[in-house]
Structure formats: C-alpha cells, structure tokens
Length: 407
Ligand code: ADP
Ligand code: ASP
Ligand code: MG
Image 1 (cartoon, rainbow, N blue to C red):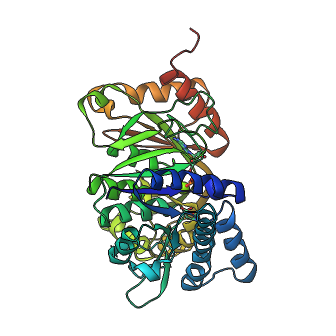
Image 2 (cartoon, rainbow, N blue to C red):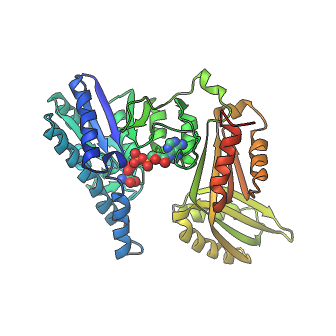
Image 3 (spheres, rainbow, N blue to C red):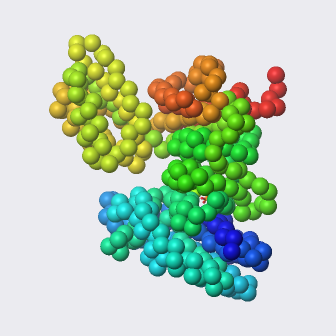
C-alpha cells in the first residue's frame, strides 16, 4: 500500500468551496489506490481571530489556556473535511491529536513533537479510510493540549511523515511554490524548482513563512522531500531536498524579510569580561531568542550592547534590559520596533566572493541605511528601517535576481 501525506494550509481550507476542492484532490489520490493521510490547518483567519478573543479577556493569558483555545481551530477543519469527503462517497475519519497520540513536550504555545503513534492511523488506512489529522496541535504525556507555534501545521505533517517512514510529504498552499522573494511583495519573484534544505532553512529562518522553520529542520534530519505546491493549480511546485551538485550554481537563491523584529540597546555599561555572558544568560532564562548582537567600545572603559529579538519578546526584553542597565551602571536603554531584517540567501555564496559588497552597494544606491549586519556562509542579513524594507528587497531582487531587467 503506497502511503501519501498531504497538508493543506488555512487558505486552502478557507470556505466550503475550498474544502470541497481539497476533498476532490484527496479523493483523486485515494481512487488511484493510494492510502491517504491529510493534515489540515485552521481555516484562514481563525487562529488570528482566536488570539484576538483571548486578548480581549486578558493582556497576559495563560499559555495553557491559549493552547486549549487555539487547538479548536484545527479541530473544526478536520471534521469539515471528513464530512466533505464522506459527502462525495469516500470513507474518511478525522482524529484530534489526543486520539492518535501526537505527543509533544510541555512547552505551551511552542511545543515540539516528540513521538507519534502510527498504529491507529495504520489501522484506519488498512480499512480503506482516508485519515484526517490536525496540524499544529499535540498532547503531552499528561494529557495536556499543546500547540506548536504559528505556522506549525507544516511541522505536524513532516512529523507524521517521519512516523510513517515517508520519503516525501506534499504541502499545499496558496502560492505555486517557494519563490525567490515573497511573491506578494516582489512582483518579479520567480518560482524555484528545487531548493536545498540548507537554503530553505535560511529562507524560513529569515522570515519566508511559506514553510515553518522546524518542518524543514525535521525533513532535513530525516531526509524527507517536501513538495510545496498550490491547492489551486495542478503544476509541480518546489522540491525541498538534499543539496546536489547542480544546485550549487546559484550565487543567490532568494531574498527574505522579517518585519516582526525589534532592537534593544543598553548604553555605556561597564566593560567587564563576563558582562555579555550575564546579559545573555538573563535573556535566555526568560526563554527569549536573540538574533544579531553587536558590542561597541565607546571609551572610558564603557561598552554599548545592542541586540535583536522577535517583536513578541520586545516588552519582556526591554524590562530585563532596564535591570541590566542598573546592574552594570549604564546610562540608557533604547528600544526600536521600526526595524526590518532583510536577508540574501544562496549556497553559491560559499564559492563566490563579493556578494556582501554588492548588497551594500545596492542599498546605498537606494539611500537605505544599514544599522546592523550578520553573515553566515550562505546568508547576508541587514537590519534596516522598517519603512525601507519593500524598497530594499525589490532593489536587491532587481539587481541580483531578475533575469530580464533592462540594461
Ligand atoms: P498556509 O496557510 O498554506 O500555511 P502561509 O500563509 O503560511 O500558507 O504561507 C504562504 C505564504 O507565504 C504566501 O502566501 C506568501 O505570501 C508567503 N511567502 C513569504 N515568502 C515566500 C517565498 N519566498 N515564496 C513563497 N511564498 C512566500
Ligand atoms: N493555524 C495555525 C496558524 O495559523 C497553524 C498553521 O496554520 O500552520 O498559525
Ligand atoms: Mg503556513
């Protein structure tokens, strides 16, 4: 029995017509003799709407209760899809995470899948049923409902692929594949046919939300190919897979942006050897992820430390930084949410010099100030003003990625 795993995102499940479209695609595979597992997200807008409801009640809701609420979005989707498939004459059954044992850790709102019990899923497939499972939700060993974090349904689909020894997982979304930039922002963005796990990890980590970062990580670890494609078009999408010789040719594969970042600076603190350890331990203890860090010596044995965090961690990081300022006798803490991080990504950078210089010169020509820079062997990222981000990624794309630009 050939098993196929398909995941459909929120826009693919947006309304009754979309759900019927998904049902038809699933049934087509079933009628070709395949055993089909479908993973679905909450309908478009539902997770946002639920989060908004929580905010109306509490400024700082318990993470356990948030997960309890958020998991319902996916539960509605699985049952609606099962009904649509049954309505069309095929047998389908939906299960929530608890019923099939999608076991996660206890980290509410950002839980990680530890194990999936494939027995029940296999039993149903053997009976000829299409099995429909929720993305994004899980259950702890103590029966607590958890959620994997925004965009986490992609990761659920790959984890199910791992549990069932799949070679490939299909992820259906609202664009034709992974593009060289967000196609909703850069009009000349090109669809990429193949992309390596490493490049896709950099793209996802840099803000290309077309795939959840952890889904790519998990797929890479287990060598599962991801076929990212559109629910609304039959064409082949993008294959995310192990790097191959031919893929190395591209100096730059794509450009990504993240406008949900914030910068914090602690000014004129004492320059002691273990300051940085202390500062970033405090921030790590609050479970805050830090992105770029800079340290400048400003004379008189003083330093300024700046760092980038996700916007959602801004308030907590600011509070911690105020305490750190006092501890190290600093003179100010500055916060700035009007920033964006833009990233240029490509395996070919490993063997081509001068890419950073090209990026800086393109931004300079557009009069865009660069505040911070970080690089890896396949990624150059710059922190710029948020108002400049569309101009920045469009200019970089035009100069480095557009095939047919006028000379
Ligand atoms: P789904 O609900 O199906 O999971 P998402 O909204 O999470 O869909 O992801 C698809 C969206 O990702 C696209 O609509 C697109 O705007 C955005 N996106 C950002 N960067 C890229 C990129 N490089 N290639 C394709 N889409 C991208
Ligand atoms: N419903 C969740 C979200 O909107 C998970 C997902 O769609 O992947 O983030
Ligand atoms: Mg998504």
